[in-house]
Length: 579
DNA sequence: CCCCTCACG
DNA sequence: ACGTACGTGAGGGGC
Image 1: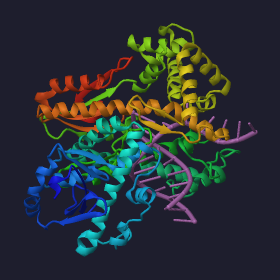
Image 2 (image 1 turned 60 degrees about the horizontal axis):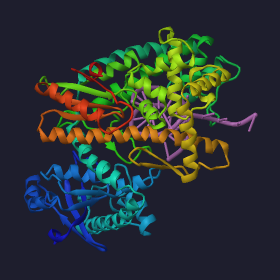
Image 3 (image 1 turned 135 degrees about the horizontal axis):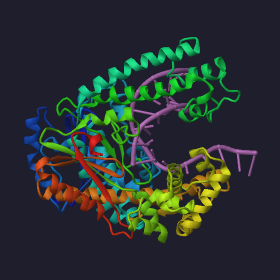
Image 4 (image 1 turned 90 degrees about the horizontal axis):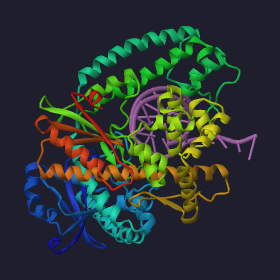
């Protein structure tokens, strides 16, 4: 029956949420509204493979299209049983993400909203989250069938709605040429995983642990009492009530005492306890979030860490990473960098290669705005922050000192965020009037940027959305709000979204092209990680030169652009040295 | 389950 | 006079 269908909706039922460890229980199919079937599979892996054998050619048929909600999950499950999907695919979750990037995209919500139908919830079937939650394996076949078949049917109906909408909003190219091809790339990266040197982290954790104990003693003795330093509430009471180190304690937006880094930095001179708390905080973070947590994420079978990328969370088009998040591994501080050292190649024969775009977001705003001065700086391969400092402080590039460059760097970043004088002043701790002078000088020197920004906001007000170079849209419902604060936030989004989003478009295209080229040559080297403007590869040493050429080339020429895109790369025995 | 804090781009 | 930088995920506290 499935042979005759061009478009097949399906959904896999498994024993868990992690496709690497979950077992397949069955697959539901739907090729016609209101009619769906569930195929339960045997228990033993080999028996499943035998049973699915006749289905393989369907999944490999390039003339078919397979439709699912969050298809990357199903792809990874089926891959464990030898099935590789070569057919086209349509993910209803990703489709909705393009249509409404700021919303959530869960199937129950989509069914209610677009089909006016409330599906059987997973909770009805296996119970609420917690240790009493049942396993899908323990549920009667009849009930699983009903649940699974319903999901396939809903997915089929959602596809009909979203396909029309994608066409109407001119999303077909972004969807079919970028987002859907990327699914397979991400699935492969996730399956591959990255090796972690647990011993290094263990040693580091113990070392920090000793220091933390000493810092804790010091802090308690300054306070004259023991308390939980990890509790912002208790720490606030100690600092602002017991020690009363300032007469105007900083507050959070909910009225609590504020003890964050920013607040503490400003109180540094007031009491010796502050310095200790700051040290304690940063080491505590490294220990609990990274040194202690990462080893628990290593998969027992593969010995590697397998993150999951989400293509439907960040409203700008960026990816996000969970379980664990490998997009926020420390790099800025000396101690933090020790964590990066623990990310290593799979074996002696491999080397980690890191390739990152240099200043991609500033290059994008230069290109989009066509500002001649900024484009020229990039074409001459100048240090953009020094060039900016030279312009706004009216000195020669040689005369730019560190302070001037730091300030220029902050303005450059502020521009990307749609900055205000207030925001800039707060960020680099200067007066508001000095911030205003700097911004005025900036817009004088880069007039194209200024007019681009006003034009972008104008377009947003008119159309209700802004878009990236690949026509990814972000809708800004508050752009015409009468509330100045709300409108201001929407205006900053109008500036930021096309920049951050176009950078996301570019690296996604590069990833797809690199992946296909690597497949074509059947390299042993593998793409492992994406960190917004950086790609990390596990490179087989014999292939190093070829892969470097390939990666640099595909990244720098992912799109045609009026500003050169430059990629810097390095390889080494760990992620820190490679970066 | 929300809040605060802090790690990254 | 107001209150702001853009986008994320995770750990710990506390209700």
